[in-house]
Image (cartoon, rainbow, N blue to C red; front, top):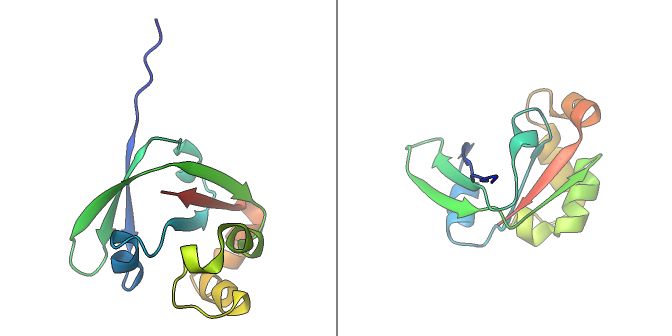
Length: 116
């Protein structure tokens, strides 16, 4: 008999992304598809922690998709679902590329869209 266990992962979010995710305005988290994210599976639990005050809440992963770029991930997930308040795809991609090494890591690992 094989038992499958759901894992619990921790991810930090800054504002306004923490509040938007908590209030279900943001229903997709997009990250670099590095070794940590490769462990994520449907039905796993993510505990999102506010990077400013350590408040937290949990979400269950409903779906996962992997892409070779932020642009493709954002267009698939729809801008309003992954970055509410951002007006254009260009602005969204610029935001992701503003994180240290994200442009290089995007090319190396690809990008994961996590739906909850």
